[in-house]
Image (cartoon, rainbow, N blue to C red; front, side, top):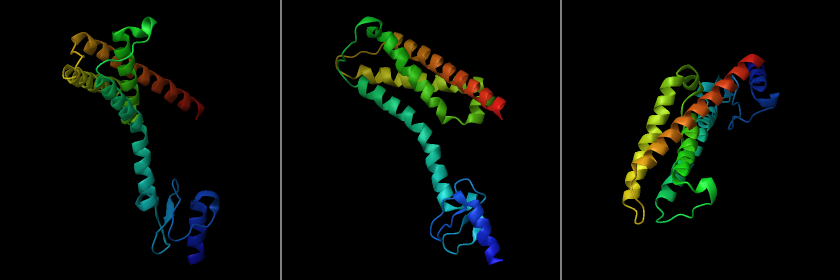
Length: 182
């Protein structure tokens, strides 16, 4: 029986190699080692799998948080250098910033949510990004040299709609492509 368990554990872990009793690397296996006894346990109860799953849930959320921090930092500046040409147009800068925000915020939703509830996801992404746009404009009201402008908020909302729509269309295209290859 013990040899049979050891064989199951070796087959379940990556590469079929031996895993010490105190460590588990079975990220996608159905069996893992109990850290204290070395007996097989379901991977859903393995502390290492749970920890890695938590990390993998957090990673896709980081880009949206970085975009939010970048927008907040730029909004806190009294004056910003303006690029030449069409990118110097203030409303286009707002549109691009919130397009990127909504596109990166789409990763906060599960793939199933993005696939099967597209309109609800689109509405939530636009609503949340637009609400952040309102808070950003109120924040700019208190920054010397900046002002609160409803047209900036409209540009933010249009950018959020375009970004959320583009992210969901790309997600749909990728999902279809993966479904056709399987």
